[in-house]
Length: 197
Image 1 (cartoon, rainbow, N blue to C red):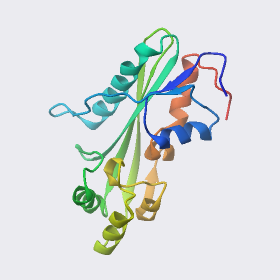
Image 2 (image 1 turned 90 degrees about the vertical axis):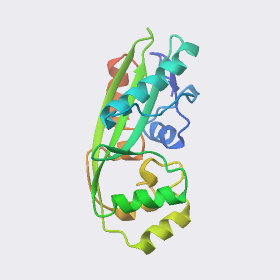
Image 3 (image 1 turned 135 degrees about the vertical axis):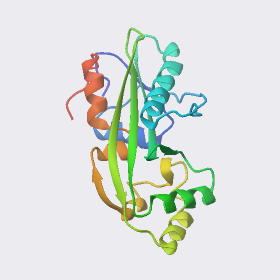
Image 4 (image 1 turned 45 degrees about the horizontal axis):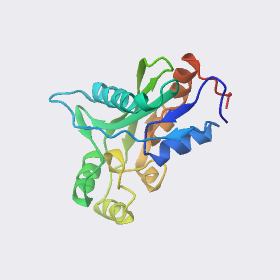
């Protein structure tokens, strides 16, 4: 579906975000990941970081797509004020899972759209997730599955990681990688003529 209200460019390399958009009938006209430094600034809070990075991604790609809508997102897993990024290796993924075991954490989704006039509009969405108590065997088996790779916080709720989740509150699609309800509301509010799912 290519709506008449303008083309949509997804500024993300995430296959999950593309699949979520397809799920609600939106096929971006182009997919172009942003290349930027995602290092947090000192004492930056997770909510601020998620929105800042999403907006930076959209703004980095927008100059090559003038007159289009450019959508970007960022997902942060946070335990208190500590942000858990994508683990660098199996050891770090193991540390993340041990930290999340038996605890509640937040998944913060930053979304940003650069509109057809070049203005950026951002939102943040917060979902709460509680993990069951994980045994060493649970963690070792998950690490061996390799599912933790390229996942914020070191797990995927849409995969084997669902077995760890005892409770969620808020947007499930946000935990996967893109809060669909809020993203569609933002796009439609800016004039993107997407059909109702």
